Image (cartoon, rainbow, N blue to C red; front, side):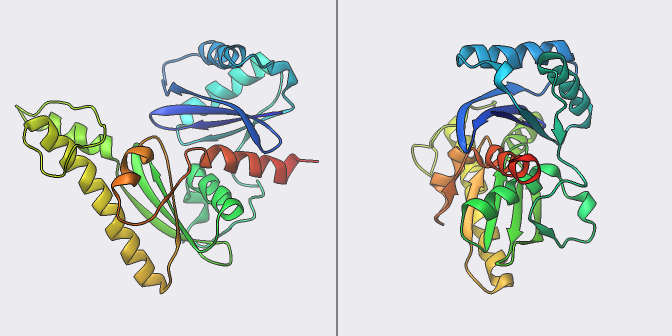
Length: 256
């Protein structure tokens, strides 16, 4: 049994795997001020809630885009389990050829997403990760990571809008009743969410034009379930893509 941890800018997602099956998945806030003991308690609580013993763990693998939290989690895992976690970085086998200008600059989250993509879905593909930022990763038929795009995440756009205006309120995101809003809250909700969906449709179309072929479209990330239903393109929603990628990488490097 292995524990996969994805440390993002907003949330930390933990998933426990037995083989290729996810036993449980939980999410906690990314808090740079939290101590290793506090995160150890959070991990222990997740196992207890799902009636699973962390003593059965044989390995832990971590992807992080928040360097201050990487060592915090490393210490918390070692304190709780006695295991030394595998951190995604140089030297880890992925089965992915990275063809960008400086492969070392590619975020570990994008690498892990792409590893899951090439092992789970047809190629070529565009992987759209909707979190604090929205990223597009392009992988060709030969498992080459060609590059991608990074743009502002939907929640960040909404926060910027509210913080720069005097009378617009912060809104909760749920499915808009219709495109044309008839009150301020619905107008903000519809505007932010449909503009994100239209941006995805448009960017995907232009990427495919540049590649000269259609791609499998895969969406993941905390906001993906809200936006993919609003897109005109058919997009596979896989909210466990990152965890699956971590499991694939662990098994490729340390599996029996």
